[in-house]
Image (cartoon, rainbow, N blue to C red):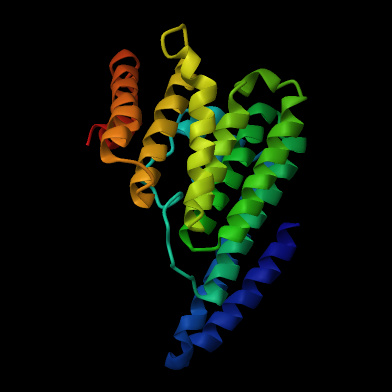
Length: 281
């Protein structure tokens, strides 16, 4: 396997040497560089399969786990995503076709490698959640680059993975509210396509489902989901001017701020200030 990777590297380096001799073709250098990166990832995977490199080191290099080898569970990953990130914003940015193909190939190869590692690695739980995290990263990347059709496909793929793993020995890792969390991700992509009305409807549906828990013993994930749904619903309603400022402030932003601050005060984390600040402002 590694001999094939070496030959592929030689071929790509040869292409780079040709391109470097012509200034007019420097824009084309990105594709071979991306190929080298992909080959490097494949080489790292081979080392893991051979047992010479721990899988946690590879996951850490790919930004899928922390230095302690811990991978975020899917519910926590989605709830802690920055509400002000480009995923969920309207963007008209279109990437260069060649560059985008290189990025898409890199994302797909990582997903394929992780699927192989799930079957071969002794640490199946972490690798499983790393695969779901990688698909979510692809979804966010496609949204950021204005490829909302592919973002929807990535989110659908993520939903299928979650459904398959929920029937495995890791089913307890997935919160009961995960379908609602994924509905909120659907809504974010809708806003990228200027479909604010349906996105707002999704937020209201989630809020109505959870509102009975506000005065009860609602768990942390539900409180965080409720706060995020209120915040994003209020932001999108402001964008559309679908209601008065008073109603949006009192029914959405104020409640979101109170919940977010309560979550931060009770269980502060690295992400909680990012969740609380937009709601307060």
